[in-house]
Amino acid sequence: MTQRGRAPDRRARGIRASRHVLLISALVSTLSIAVAPNARASSGDLDPSFGSTGWLELAVYKYPEGTGLAIQDDGKVLVSIGSPISNLFSVARFLPDGTPDPSFGGDGYVRTGFWRRSSAEDVLLQPDGAIVVAGTSGKRMVAVRYLTDGTLDPSFDEDGKASVLFGDRSSRLAGAALSPQGEIVLVGTAQRTLKHSGFAIARLTTSGAPDASFSGDGKALVAFGSCRCSGAEDAVVASDGRIIATGWARSSGAVAALDGDGKLDTTFSRDGMLRTRFSSRSDWATASAVTLTATDRILVAGWIPGRSGPRGRLTQLLPNGRLDMTFSGDGVTNVPSAFPEALAVQTDGKIVVAGASCCGGGSELFFTLWRFGPNGDRDRSFGSGGVVPGGGYELAIRGWAAVALQSDGRIVVSGGREFGAVVLARYLG
Image (cartoon, rainbow, N blue to C red; front, side, top):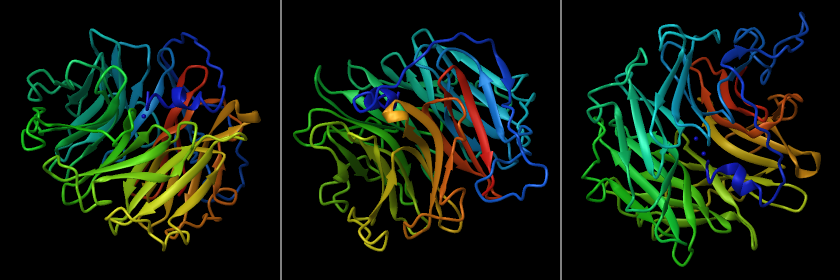
């Protein structure tokens, strides 16, 4: 599910968020949240069986953030941990009750060092149970594969680490996805020239090698016409192998569709590229998250900067790229004062949107969840009128950066707190 340009950097054009740096020793703690003993649990409530309050914090190093999430079949929770000022790839695993898993790295926490500044951005579970963490190291997109006990997998590109370089210029990974065959898709931004960037999309085989059947060398770079600056933030792979990537193209959200061979899919918006309806004439906008419904509709979340705060958007597209008019009447529904960052679709078709809401005159970000019905209407049975705010907890770096659904319908989210801690929470579905 993003730094995503990095997302806070792009938002800085529309808001002024303060940032503080604190060095904190590694620990796991929980916030003291008062829960009425006889309160009736409702959809959107924190789950007290997760870390006793439903809320966990992991303080590891400066500016940490829970960037990606995956739920194992046994209910264990994996979270990738990123930081813009670290040389480490980090991933943590928690038992279903929220305690660190000692069978993973000895203490539930695994760190992998790199020579250059590195940051993990997403975590994936391959069909055989192997764990793939993807991110950026120096100028390269990187994927690291771990065995189930947290040790590096030596069968993956010989040392457990695979990297992708787009030419001699820098690239930055924002998200990752798996194909139905277990191939690893990496997406982000790559510099085409000194002043030009594009969607960077790479595909690795299950063993970590560049997939030569994808665009000849395992890499595709998509430029949005005359737009000099564009970049991908998220991607999803359809059952037929088609890759849908979302991101930004200067002042609008953007979507690109590639077929399994790495070529632009001309059945999507005629040329494989689409500018979304959420756009700004003079400032940055982005399509920050994408997922598919059970009927292969394409759900895209993003935001537009505004004078009174951000304006979030949730759009549903048909497989050919056209707006789905059965969704909210015109294919688009509003998410007020929001920075949507991640999406998930429940088995009943309801849509969970995770991110941040903007308060305090546009200078403060708070963890927030929203839920919509399959038709785009706000689900009023969830939280307070379809919204679950962070409850006044510490300020967020960019809100919830990732969301995952358990098999029992509970909602797990991860992000980062302003003053230096990874945050995990689990809510009742």
